[in-house]
Every structure is written in C-alpha cells, then in structure tokens.
Image 1 (cartoon, rainbow, N blue to C red):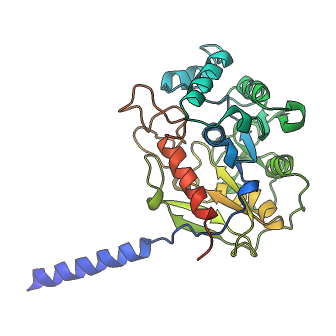
Image 2 (image 1 turned 180 degrees about the vertical axis):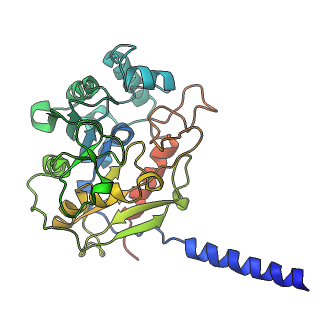
Image 3 (image 1 turned 135 degrees about the vertical axis):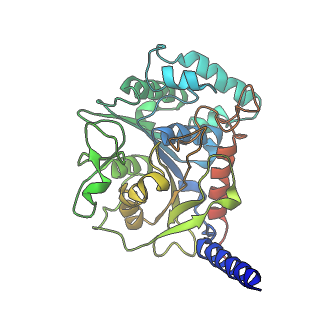
Amino acid sequence: MRASSLLVVGLLLATGAQAAERLPELPRRGIEPEGISVIGVSSGGYMATQLAVAWPERFAGLAVLAAGPWSCAQGGLGQALGQCMATRRGPPDLSVLDARLRDYQARGLVGEAEALAELRAFVWHGEEDGVVNPSLGEALAEQLAGWLASPDEQLRVVRSPGVGHGWPVQADEQVPPSQLAQCRLGGGTHMLACDLDIAGEALGWLHGTLTPPQQGTASELLRFDQAPFAARGLGKAGYVLIPEGCESGGCELTIALHGCGMTEEQIDRAFVEHSGLNEWAEANQRVVLYPQATTSLANPQGCWDWWGFTESTWQLDPLHDTREGVQVKALMSMLERLGQSPE
C-alpha cells in the first residue's frame, strides 16, 4: 500500500511539473507579408542570409552583423573555422559561392535571381572583431552588391572602429551591467556596451524613416513553445514581442536571430530584452520574433546551422543553406504561423 501511495504521489508531481512547463503556442497574428525583415548576428547573421537567399520573395530586408558571405562554409566545419571565421585558409572564393547559388537556383532550392535582386540589405562589422574577421563582412557586402539591382540604393555597409564581436547596444540604466560585454573585447553575453543603436540603424535602412522609440517598452515578451516547429538544434522555447495594436493583424515583422553563445539557456533574456529592437518595434507597430537554438554535442555553443551540422550525419552535401534545410524550414514555419489570421 505504501509503495502504491508513493507511486501515485510521484505521478501527480510529474504531471504537475509537466503542466508548469507547458508553454503557449506561437500565436497567429495576420502579419503584413510585404514588410518582413530578418536580422542576425554571427551565426544568426549567416542564418539570416540563408533565409533571405532561400526565400527572397518573402523578405523585404536583410541585416547581417558580424558574419561573412552566404554559404561560406559550403557544408564543412573545417571550412567554417578556417575560411569563414578566421581566414587562415585564405578568403572565400565568391565565384565558387556564386556557382553554388546558380546550381541551387536551377534545382529550385533557393529563390530566383530576380527576387534576390530586390532586397534591401544592411551589413555591419566591428573593426576589432577577433571571432569573425572583418574582411568577411566586406566579402558579404561584395557578394550582395553583385546580386542586388541597384547596390548604391539598396545596400548599406557600416564598419565601427574599436568594436569587437557581438551586437552593439546603447548601454543605459535599463540594461543591467551584468548583461553587457565590453565594447572592444566582447565575450560574456556578446551584448556590446558601445553606445551604438545598431537596431535602429538597421531597421531604418531596411524600412525607411521610423518613429523614434520612447524609453522602455510596455509590451511583454511571450515565451512560446517551439516543439511544433521541431528541428535539430532548435531550443524548447522561443520569444515573440507583439506590440499593442498588433493583436488583430496588419503589423510588419522582424525575425531576430541570436549568435553563438547567446541562447536563452546561455545568457537568459539578455538578447531578447536588450537588443534595442523591441523599442523600435513598439514605436512602429512591428512584431519581433526571437527563435532560439540550443546547445548539443554537435553544436556546443548553441549556434544556428550555417555549416551543415543538422544534416551532415546523413548527407554528403547537406542542404542546410536551402529551402530544404531543417532549420530554414522551421523558421519559415514560424513566419507562416504569425502570418495566419488571428483566431
């Protein structure tokens, strides 16, 4: 009898724990399909470009911080480390990457050149970046310039002296010092206390003149269940900011992708709360989606898959950088969910 009672108690406790962990679904919010942008830093920058190249007809703008050219790693970790972070193997060969793009386009694995040519793009790099060589940001800018219809009008390239690897933010009393990293050295949360509003600069370039934000945000971040979008390397939960007035639809969307070492499990909510995107989004009726990757043996730093780890165990030529990539599919499914009419 005592054993049975203990078993019942154990089952009740387990059920209660599962209920406490149950997260809400990503809501349907009737997102305006014409004004969607994607912005990412480091591995998130590489993934942002993969999304925009895979589905350029779905994105109005692309912003990349501290990352190199599209498909730089070509499905290999050695290539990623030796030519797409450091450059000890030499610079990436953009002609090889363009041939890869044309092959993908011929096979219907990425968007057509005409759609890619219409993107607006923003590229930023810190000149003291010791993780991803700043020359790789220049290579990305050169690559994009070769794709865009009018690079002088569609592409903005910014290099910041004295800034290291990470996401620059304006450090004020709203950001706890423990959630900031030194501007030049980086590390820690990778949220760089540089007094740079990179979020506002990027969004302003991608979407035109915006209303300046007020101090702080009134809208809450919703932590949602990522299980319905299950993909290797995806975390349990993601976040979304839905400003007041966007519940019934019609608002635009920005997808924000963290870098390596910047997931919720690694730096808590530092990125999703203090990137600067939320304030601009609230002032301009933009929804912000913060998907979350996770750590694993194959991916100990919680990076987005820009070198093929999600598929390389069963594919000699992983398709992580195409419409068939498992993480690309998951992220686009989140976009689709937000685009559906509110219930």
